Length: 150
Image (cartoon, rainbow, N blue to C red; front, side):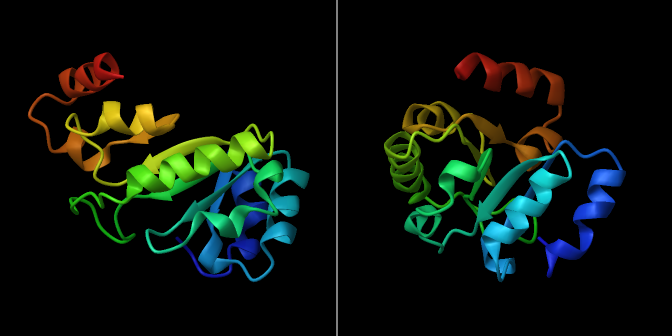
């Protein structure tokens, strides 16, 4: 969630990052950014804000290792999950299959026990449950319960 992520690709690579995701909305030349990430030996991901349509990935999905679907607006934890995310995940899964891409689908924001199984059923591969886990009185138990659900 930074402006001009191209400026930081070398820094992340030098620090040992294996995967680097950039917001589509922050990249003037997304394909060039993805190529630069991969040239540094990292896997490349693209994050989409809730209002950004999936079809914008049509021409680049085959080059991606990961797509992060933001299910809340970026900025702070504890926001309410945006229900349209399920449909967005299904559309993204269909695009990935149609283009024979190997990209994983990651969901970030508002993930909790009440929606984890439904997100995986829609096509999600990775779930980020930060606030749900860290606000729990028993974070380890919460993680175990999430894993059991999916």
